Length: 210
Image (cartoon, rainbow, N blue to C red; front, side, top):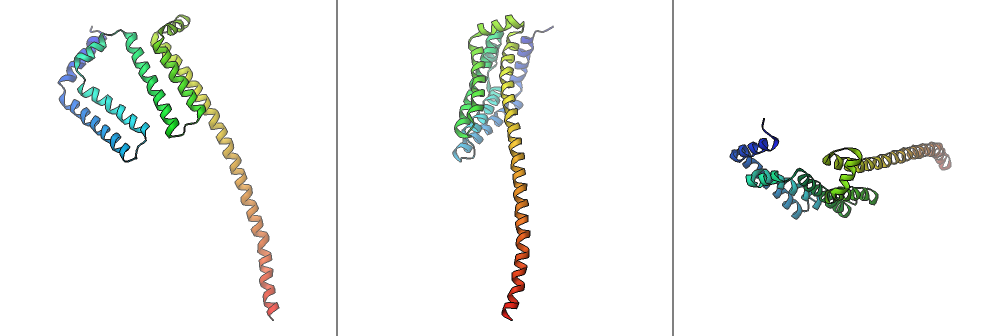
């Protein structure tokens, strides 16, 4: 039975000969780059959206033009090294997106701090595998599972903070709705009180002329 690496190598050889899907990936990548660059110059996209489009273009270009030898050299690396590189890349991307959101989309500090801590936690896990080994020894999880557990813990804190903010927002909206209803009721009462006075004034004007 073929191993996982052998299956990947067979897929690489098949993909190297598949010119039509590779050409489609190249066209999609070029289109993504065009959208990002034109959006930046015409101020239709902010830097964060342009970065996401460029990342999508980079992924499609990798599928279209990356040499098979490069993929084989990546497969030859140890499993832990590949996981650490992926986790470090994700953490740097999260950090850049968070900083860009603070500058352009006015992300509040309380949310930004949570995302920055999440990014740094992932980066520490990638750069200091000994700490992950301690977690693995304590929990019995694998390396990738331990890193996912750390990220999931921080994401739980983010989701919990979002839930608190959403609850407060709903409470404030309910209070604002009640105040608007009271104001509308007062306005209607004032209009009802002014209506008899205006009718009395109209009746007194003809008698005064007579």
